[in-house]
Length: 239
Image (cartoon, rainbow, N blue to C red; front, side, top):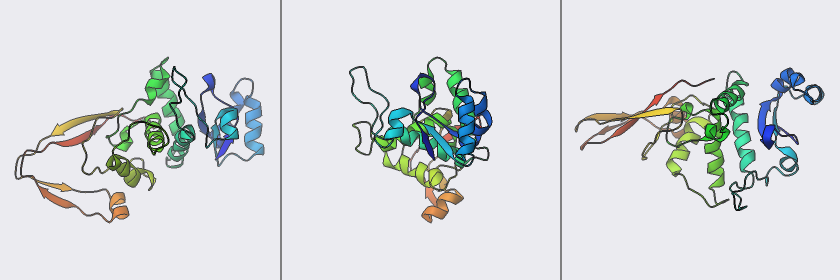
């Protein structure tokens, strides 16, 4: 991972694969040739470049990005770095490393000019149903809420499910197995309720990745009373 002192349009940080920079950087007006040469000279083709601006370059661990209207910080030190590193994880764990860049640009163009809407997210859906910016927003929130900034503390079982089933094993499209939690709809995901009849046997079957990590096995559960299950309905996901 390489950190650059440059920034995107509107002083927005962004992350791209070094190979993309070396291939397409030449076409960026003004600084394009410089970026292309830098990619070759610094051998960036197998790396990811984080564009965090001068402040982020000087101290990315303590770098903050946003304040509210009263001047109070609404991001914790290092929160922006964590968000951008999530994009590195996305590129590293996809067959096509540039895919997350296309997904991010597409979804921000779809909500133009309100780019922030592309980051909206509600936790609780399958990890694979979230677009890349909402995934980054979830991870940065977990980081923020570890006592670094007063805010909403997300249920530990939701965070644990994403980390155990998807993030640590590097399986972005694997099933997310939730335990002892109420599932909510997430951006890019639809949810429908299923109510089994009393006496119905429901098997909690984890994915192969989750089973390997936790040593979990399918657990048959007999429903004694009316219970509402939640099933996530996947919608089309770009890359």
